[in-house]
Image 1 (cartoon, rainbow, N blue to C red):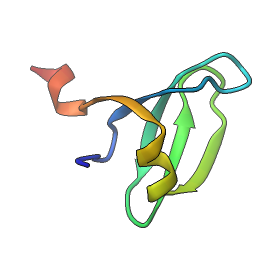
Image 2 (cartoon, rainbow, N blue to C red; image 1 turned 135 degrees about the horizontal axis):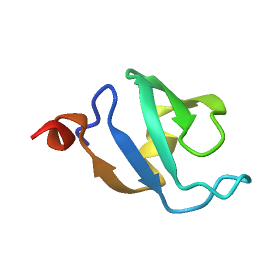
Image 3 (cartoon, rainbow, N blue to C red; image 1 turned 180 degrees about the horizontal axis):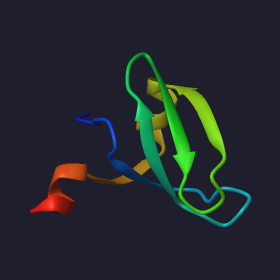
Image 4 (tube, one colour; image 1 turned 180 degrees about the vertical axis):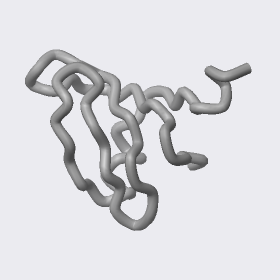
Length: 64
């Protein structure tokens, strides 16, 4: 799956704050994400994230 730095991920399940979108802060075997609603940051294994993604909004697509 093509996930890059500063992409926005829409997840299948909601965060306890009610948000579904997360911004990618670090990419690798583990990924650091920030909730767009409350600002909470988490470090999660890439495999677990890829299973729970509904949609990827690429950062360069917003600039065009």
